[in-house]
Length: 110
Image (cartoon, rainbow, N blue to C red):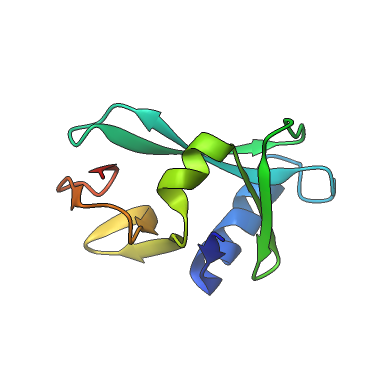
């Protein structure tokens, strides 16, 4: 399961409206893990409307989240949050599987 906080839900909804996909029920939030960043792995967020054969599909707090199986192994029980405070604006991942994160919070290691 991948969890979504209320603040992240609001921001996702706002971004979907800006991308003109909010009214299309075929679109969802795709979360993935890619190689890169100072700690070795980085998070990637996209809007997508095409599922792939081994995708894992979740819905939390009214947000449909889809991830590929390989990424899900890194993202299990992760919470997607959004911050707009002075300490940094943007999406943040509270990932219990990460053994190390970088200072910017955009990459991690397991």
